[in-house]
Length: 71
Image (cartoon, rainbow, N blue to C red):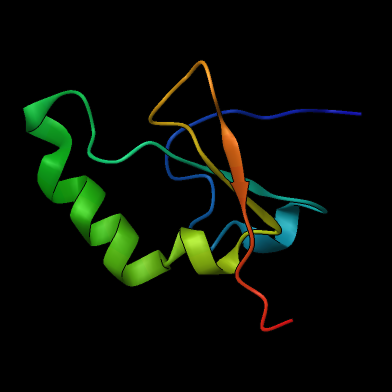
């Protein structure tokens, strides 16, 4: 098993490289210089909707898996 961590690894050009993807949603980026890049990434690559699992991690002591299916 290989686990790869990094910002913007769920770009559409890289998606086919991964068998299973997890998006950690913690809100806005910590550094203000990356704000515009973050917004563009979220708008153009839509990592939240294209990943296999999404976790809300804004409260690091209580991460929570989010489910977006219609069941």
